Image (cartoon, rainbow, N blue to C red; front, side, top):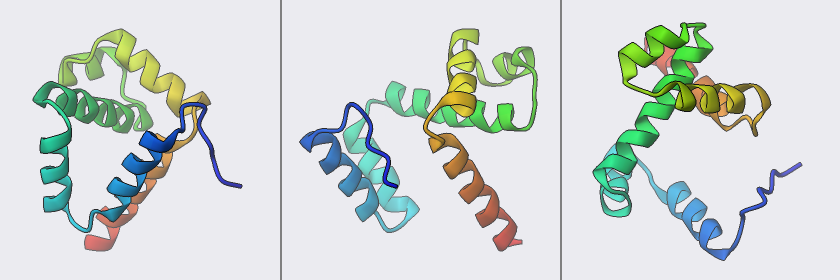
Length: 103
């Protein structure tokens, strides 16, 4: 079954297609550089790092100290990990698998 978020519209569909069209890390960096402000990229990057650390059972205090993320951000990411659409889990599993395959 395909997941359909409540916010899906023609613009978000175009964004998803754009992301799927990227073929390598360089293209992703170029796209993010054009699409987002530096602060937006840093916020997104911080959230994926928070998700990674939460999945490793690191404490809120350690995560806040290591990443600079607020406890509100950490809580939101945690809620998504446990009750969300599994987006973080999908990405983290793929990253972990790729990391193991590279070794």
